Image (cartoon, rainbow, N blue to C red):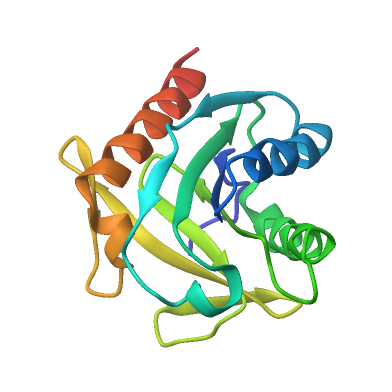
Amino acid sequence: MGNAKKPKAVKLIIGMLARNKKLFEKTEEFFIEEFGLIDYQSPVISFKYTSYYKKEMGRPLKRKFISFKKLISPEKIAKIKLLTNLIEKKLSISNKRQVNIDPGYISDAKLILATTKDYFHRIYLSQGIYAEVTLKWRKHSFEPFEWTYPDYRSKEYLCILNKIRNNLMKNHAG
């Protein structure tokens, strides 16, 4: 029998989708207040992987990732997803989201994304929130699974997420 122990702290990441780049800054203000200093900001990337958001959010969409200097305990991701849902609602116009916010975390071994949608590869956390192992770390880089979203399979995203993981590993080392 193994002994239960406290998990290592992880790196909170936020992926945002919006048409207007200024919404990224406005959204980041909420997160800085809640989670502290941002230690990484990706370039703004064109989002062309699906038309899923077209009806609600329009086009063209942009993607941006951020991560935070302060590490979190992994079990906080469910509450963070509930918070991001509230921020999406607050920034909505006529019940249409202007920004889509995807929180997750990076550990030394994986990228976890929080979601409200259940499926065979997702684990229920609490309060209607599930966790998905989206990427695994293997031989110097993240790798996708068969269920990984197409954008998270892209070299562009993998490069960004690898950089964020490298920052985490520096935190664990120092």
